[in-house]
Length: 409
Length: 55
Image (cartoon, rainbow over all chains, first blue to last red; front, side):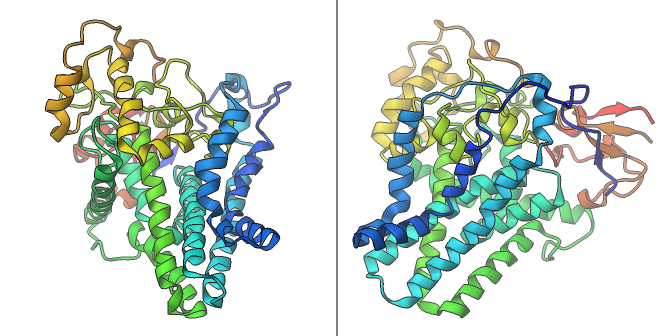
């Protein structure tokens, strides 16, 4: 590789942390509960004799996680600047994300085995597929953390974590597409004011796939190569899925196919519903030279609840992530004045699947964020007239949000 | 021929060495990068943002 990088992200900062203790250090191990969901479902069924526990996955994400957020409360503490470098380089945190993957694979193989045995009713088998989909969906958050890193090992682990959901192209599109065009109408993975999750889902799935292929084909064409090669990072990521899914189908028989497919759809839908809430309605303004303003903390929605923060590897500290995509999860910071969601991502997912409730919770919040000027938002074209009628009168009132938030630089 | 650094993530592009993975032959000037090229590591900065470094 001729392209290298100069040192660490925070050169000049003391690498040794004398007195500071990370309150969440051991909490990160709780993230490993997520790939254990299918096993927990099995245990609960065994202990109670109730087949309904095969649906433990959605109960965990839509019930337990929001509940734990209620109990766990806010998490607004940041590591002091002086320990950032030391914290970045502590490999313990990396291992928390690596260890997720063997458990995730054990859960996937275990589920395939359960489907193959024929002891589950159809509704129980579907429940297990949805539960495994929850595991492999949150695995995309783990893959997301790993896929942003320069280390080849971590990039490969990201692909491996994405293989069960057949979503390996995510790493390309997310890093080189979404991060570049975030909070602009051009980004398929940034949702628009007035756009329901159900309208967003096909747009982001198809648009992200198309964009990912275009990005890799362009890169390979510059090097004089055909896009149809294993050097194409989409093809080599999908190859892993073919090996995994093919292996499972050979080992456990074709009757697991519909459940394997269903868990994949649940997994990537879970990722996309999180995409849906992360930038809803937010828009980077165009500069005089035609470029968009650089992504600032005002262009992402954040949440700061300790439980969902731990289960999602600080993904909810989304403003800092977009400002500094290579920062490791343990050092991401909370910003007091970045846009804050009414609840954690887990609770927001529940709202997002009921569009009228979601619009009622979020639309005014977006308009308020722009000081009452709805024209500054990223608006769903088909909803523009309606939204202008409803919110179009304001605009002169509040202060400019872009001036009140720490700079990304 | 010079070296350039991404102001966000510190990635270095060395014009003399090029960048085979990105499809840039040795000797490709950063000024000749396609206008839509963005830093492949962070995605936050474009070619025009890269800063010339010594050496």
